[in-house]
Image: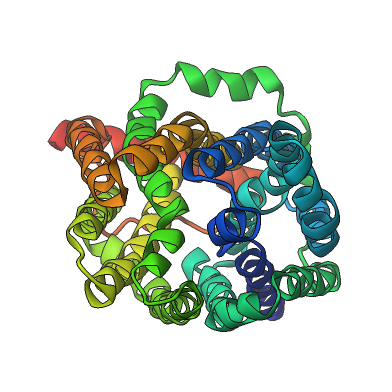
Length: 430
């Protein structure tokens, strides 16, 4: 068991490194590629991002239910790895020509591919890693930090490569994808007949029952109202950032360097975040991360040059690790373990995509009409409203709570029952 624990930690860390390297190469400069290479305006780019989110919305419930049904099987990681390999050919020979010829058709094709591959795909992989990590007793965030390092490694030179030729970035994403399938096959995840039998018996109606739980919708307030608005802000932030430099090329390169620095710091945060969240509890962790988001959005509106806007960018390195750890611990504490992937994929990933699909065109229009700074103030104001609502409605989570390792479905059910009992005692006390 110990040998498999070390092996699986190493393999899954390398897998996330390669996946997020590919994601950074394909997605981190997407807004710049759309606006400068394909010459879309803010509203058109916002429409493309919105359709991407719709594509992700189609993938997320499917990934969530499939992940819970597959349990520890490697079906979902292999499917996503196969899609990543197609990144270079898709961007250059399908996506770009279609967007030039017909924006709706190109946006639809991009929404399906990017939604299933990098947007919903990243959440599905994180949920799978969390599941395996809880079974073998290693911390999700300590594995996820290698994903951050992979993203940062790509971001460090993605801006320079983009200035040479965007095609280089996209084909490097495909190259990273080629490493994913061999890596996931190296993982040695022992079959658990009892757990797999329970997963095979999971019915769609069981999953749909989640939507009748008040605790699920209280969780969704924070996801839909705060983190969604932050993601809308973050979509076209690279374009605004690069516009504050003397030339677009210098701005692209500096964004790549800063993005890399931010993500390397973020990786360190992934190591420390479990200690912070364990001390303050998952609910307070969610609220702390969301408040940092709001400060960063408003701060970007006040930024007057490269230095201050860079400080706002670096705040992401503090917020994201706390948010990631808090989300998984909140889900593990307040929901049955057999629904963990569905809650994460629907509650977090689908919730993000739903909000982005609605809000991205509005934000893009706001950038065109009011400019980036004034639009940032509006986004921050709405996010603050939902933060206050979330502070009142989120279910409490006690400090020092650590999800127990998963050892088959029987152990999983025990954890779920104990957690439910703990929830009631803790809520009665608060």
